[in-house]
Length: 128
Image (cartoon, rainbow, N blue to C red; front, side, top):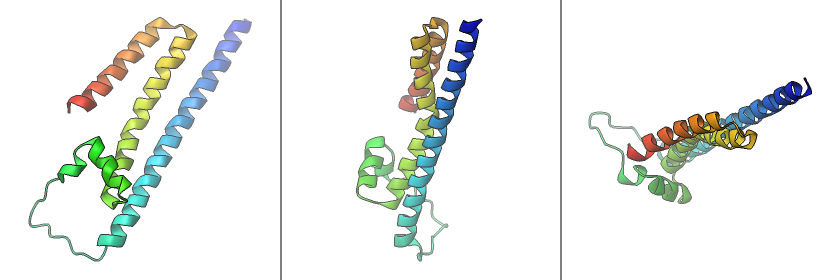
């Protein structure tokens, strides 16, 4: 019976850690997007957009490397895109942490299933 209580205690601790990870990831992403929006509005806030012509996404915002480069240059759109990448990475980080926790518990079935989910997530990001 002590093992069941210990398992429940670990499960609650793990759920708390995952909740904290998700909360921190979303808050960090929101802060980065907010900072990017402030930078963007400070530079372009008075311009009137021309919606008659569609302008696709610039090449520098089509790759992680380009987004990081633009964010390092303190460009508003780079920060906004970086915040969106952080938001996308948050649940992926949750799955990755789950793989390691299940491995620590030696729960190999869940390690395999969670690793498969992680592989599908990473593959879908890399291929698209």
